[in-house]
Length: 285
Ligand SMILES: NC(=O)c1ccc[n+]([C@@H]2O[C@H](COP(=O)([O-])OP(=O)(O)OC[C@H]3O[C@@H](n4cnc5c(N)ncnc54)[C@H](OP(=O)(O)O)[C@@H]3O)[C@@H](O)[C@H]2O)c1
Image (cartoon, rainbow, N blue to C red):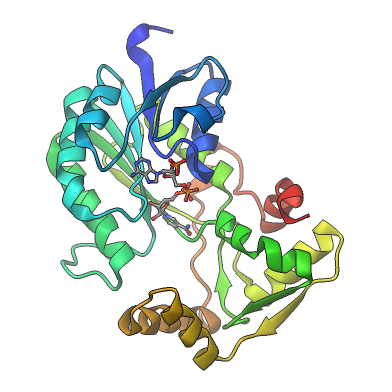
């Protein structure tokens, strides 16, 4: 592989980024990982690890020098740093694959919530930067359920909106699509909608986790007032709590969409939720 085919991965120690690194290596690609703490990054020797921070555009510029493509995520950081980061990437590379959200509404100045607001902002900056780009607009990650780890061990998961369904995506599928977009031109200028295989309610998610982990786990519905107090104590503002409740109330009455993109791009169907749990059994034990 020619030296110029190095691919930069940001968020490389995260759920999706680590998979992107792994799958690029499996294809024999050269990978440079931008990480905040190289000592704990834990990559194989063939990965070129570069210390950097997305809030420090200079470090991103250095990491991006001479790469053929960059995988970018924006982990809820202030938008103020984003223009300089995108500019730094655009100087070093000709292609950015950005991990966005299925909740971004097309051509809307004001998005429905702060998370989709920053994703829409990043998308706009990248579109204007002059590089080739692909946006991976994903529904909720199955990996967000790892926050239930301790509750699964206790045998009870406490949440509101037990009937709310989500089409949870396996991080390996997001990464597989990212790899195709990073290594060729077929998806340039495309906003790829990504979802898991099927909508599954939270009650059902808990049941499946218990079954596969081999443990009795029940779902306990938390009253909304209790949840609101808990979220306030975690620093949530009331309008954001209301937005979150409204979104979940919708998911309880309307299934999230299913898109066939994973199969169209990778040639294999999206992994199912039970497959995701099976891949993470040790995380829940
Ligand atoms: N969860 C969902 O359902 C969902 C749905 C659609 C889109 N998304 C988007 O997906 C992204 C999260 O992906 P993920 O779940 O794979 O990530 P993750 O597991 O939450 O890990 C976050 C990654 O970002 C890195 N990071 C955090 N702050 C950084 C900084 N200032 N500079 C450089 N790196 C930094 C972390 O590195 P360290 O090791 O240094 O901490 C880690 O590698 C977010 O942008 C989110 O909005 C999520």
